[in-house]
Length: 189
Image 1: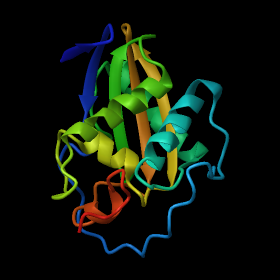
Image 2: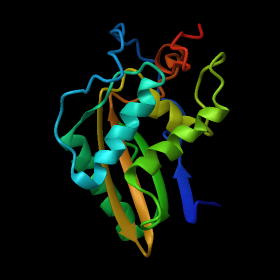
Image 3: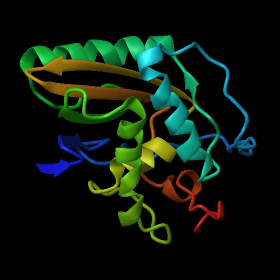
């Protein structure tokens, strides 16, 4: 554990057991201009900053904006509530992409959570690509093929737990170079 900005942060990586199996996806459409907003459900006010921050950070890597999904948010909230009841952090092991974080309740805004995950960019090797337990939050956040986002938050004994789900999921082995682009927006391979 480490202390950052007066918050005890605990990070659980986007795929505890590593990347998912290779899947041959359809070709990616070109990324829209950064100002374009994705259509979707309206997130609750407390989580709106998470969607906005995700889309701003994704635009740096030419990833299209995510649309808010009420369905994914319900799944994320149910998992956040379950984790809070047990006061534990672990992945749901579902079929969605998932990022988790926890910190002292009230110490991080929703946007701060997205920026925390994004900060792993410093450790990502764009030339090599691939999954790493040290950069899995970042790669899921900017994964170009992910189109929908839904998040939830809950509190346990002063610890705020954040859960975000992504569909389609990211961190798919063999697809990193085309889905995790550097800020130049040129694929590394």
